[in-house]
Amino acid sequence: MTAFPSCYDELSKTGWSCRETGLSSESELTAAVLETARELGAVMKGRHGSYVERLESLERDRAPASSLSAQFGRGEFPCHIDMAHLPVPCRYIVLGCGFAKERPAATLIQSVGGLRFSPDEVDCLHSGVFLVRNGRRSFFASVLSGRRRFFRWDPGCMLAKDEYARVAQAAIERELAAINPVRHQWRAGSILVLDNWKVLHGRESCDRDGAQRVIYRSGVS
Image (cartoon, rainbow, N blue to C red; front, side):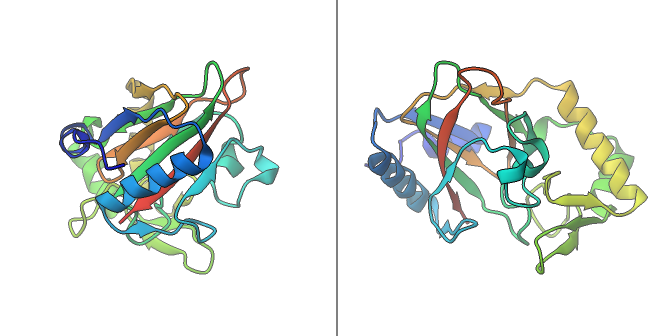
């Protein structure tokens, strides 16, 4: 199985692309996720050293420290990028749905280009200092930088450390609260590719009946 033909054009235009594979077994779907990721670039290892991670909703007390699940549990996840805790986050994310109930929690997709900031807020996005928490590898960074192309944002691992960062955070939260993101509705066997440098993504709440889903994820540098 090869990456779907429209994937690259759609990623360039909108920052995301989706296909339905019809695959039903875990082994077939994870293989398709990994193959798609490899066609996009070098696959990165996840938290546990695996090239394909299994994601499902977790209660706060079962989630890894500093993760969004540790903060929000099975509730709605705010929009963010994946692997913001690394100096250079992954470029692409490949997500495959292995299981979905009748009304699975949607993935929320928001283009970074759709966020509107004043000149002063843009200055704060560049100059505000955040502590990016990653255990002993924690570091300080801003949301934007002229030396890189991505928009670093993940409230799960980023802590504002000065007034400029607090202004930047308030501006991001205002913009995300004011817009209507794309809601990607999952079906078992579907694969979603996101340009992690171009779009933010979040998750609807998994607390309601029928919202459960299992997602397999690969990151691509």
